[in-house]
Every structure is written in C-alpha cells, then in structure tokens.
Image (cartoon, rainbow, N blue to C red):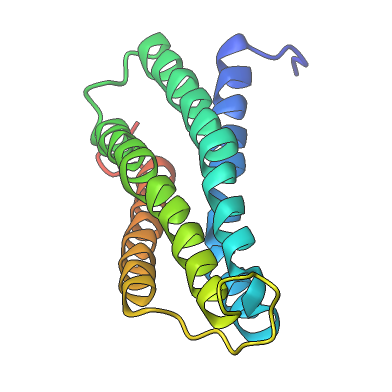
Amino acid sequence: MSLAIQFYNVVVAVHVMAVVIAFGVTFAYPFIEAQVRRSAPDSLPAWHGIVATVNGKFVTPAMGVALLAGLYAASDQKLFDKVWVQVPLVILLVLFGIVGGFLTPQSRKLAELAAQDGAAASGGGGGGGGTVTRSAEYEAVSTRVGMVGGLAGVLILLAIFFMEAKPGGY
C-alpha cells in the first residue's frame, strides 16, 4: 500500500472543495431570506447587499478555482470527451453567467429597492416607525431572483450528479 498522493488527486480534491465553497452557502439563501423577512424585515437591504457581496467576492472566485482545477484534471486524464465532464463544464459556464450577469446585480437592485421601501415607510427620513410595504417592483425582482436562483440550484445538483454518477463510464 502506497501512501503517496498524486498531484491529480490533490487537484480533484481542490476542485471538489471549491465547488462546496462556491455553492454550499447558496442553498441556504432562500431560508435565510425567509427568516429575515419574518423577523427583521428592516434588514432586507443589508441582507441583499450581503448576498451580492458573497456572490461577487466568494462564490465567483471559488467557481473560478473549480473551473481551473476541473480543466486541469480533465486535461491531465484526457477526459474532455466524457459527457460527465462536458455537461458539468457547460453548467459551470452557465452559472458564471447567471451569478455574474443576473443574480449579483439583481441582489444589488433588491438592496436598493428594499432601502427605498424602508425610507418611504419612515417618511423619507430613515428614522423608522412606519410599516414597510414592499413595492410591486421589489416583489417582482425578488420573484425573478428566486426563480433563477432555484434554476441555478437545480443546475448545480445536475452537475454534481454527472460528476459522481459518470454516465457513459470513466
């Protein structure tokens, strides 16, 4: 039995770790947001700002590490012809577009809209005291973000399925 670790195995481990780091937290977003809406609705601007920041400074860089490590691993083992490599690669590229092109900017927009709604409830002074009613625009954007976020989650799970089940074989 050899205790030596091959560089390829280290790269695959880094790839898996990057996927967990990139996407693990995103599955909690809907539950956290529901709790914020119930218990601290005045904190919605901060919540959406946090999501945008996490997506931009945490999720996207970890996706980049996952991509680079995955490309190296697939190249090293000459696996680019395997469907279980091709499908997750396409999904990851789509996720870059979804996160960077839609979810992050829309989270920033939700932060702005939630702040505007809060300011309107307090008479514009930001002093609180009024009941915050979310605007139709806020609710529409929130619904779209939820739908696209749900789609992203399904894509992530589909990519994991392909990587682990390896349809077509190794």
